[in-house]
Length: 104
Image 1 (tube, rainbow, N blue to C red):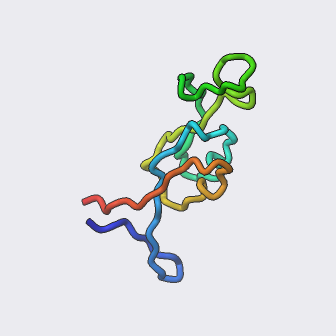
Image 2 (cartoon, helix red, strand yellow):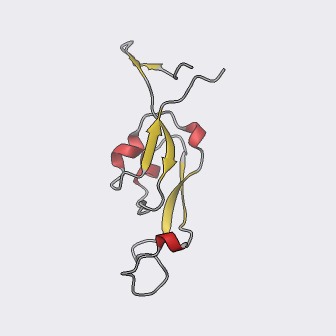
């Protein structure tokens, strides 16, 4: 199966890498990916409580740091154009990108 490819204005071929996953356990909810994305791929949501996210150093026993209770989520992943701008601005390297096959 062939991959989706694009062309630069100069005629050079490139293979876009689309956002596939967002690691919410590393996300700090800073919103940088949301601000840089022109395609409405992300949304800020309330972080869900779970035993996996429990922070033993937290003083108020809610399982989360006091810094944020929000986390980024993939809202419209299929609208991603593969520019990888979100990955370049993410301070926690939360995004996983990959190529996509040509739909047919």
